[in-house]
Image (cartoon, rainbow, N blue to C red; front, side, top):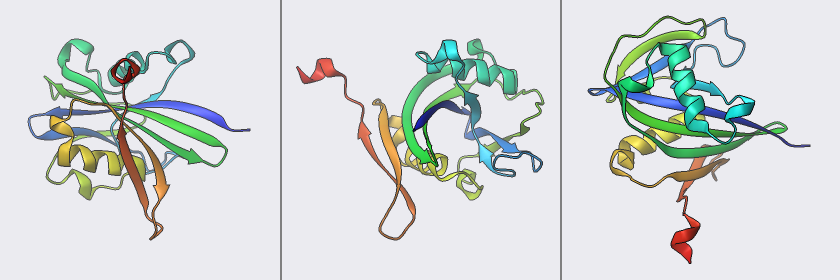
Length: 169
């Protein structure tokens, strides 16, 4: 049986820097890897990943919704992990503050966008962030993609615009 895990990730910017979390070396899941802020959707958030993302941002950084601008869902990335399908709702936005609180999940760092891809990310987030840096900042659409292996056995994502059915009538 395939199970589904719904998660959300936020990449917040202040000037030309992204707020990233480096997972603790003691973390049992991907120690030392870099992520945006985020986490699992709660049962009451399954139909509202934005609310989950806002909650996770506050829990992990202390940044509240009033300190965010242009906060938008830009990508939905899906991947299989053993018997799970992971669905990640990935948001981008601007933070009006660089002040963050400490948390027990890892350490928070502001990383310049010119060097952000020099850090160790899980493939889905690295590919998403790379796409965003190439064209996502001006993109108005929400893109959906599935992580897969290409002909060279490297992870890849083919992005497609998530069309609104009203546009197809």
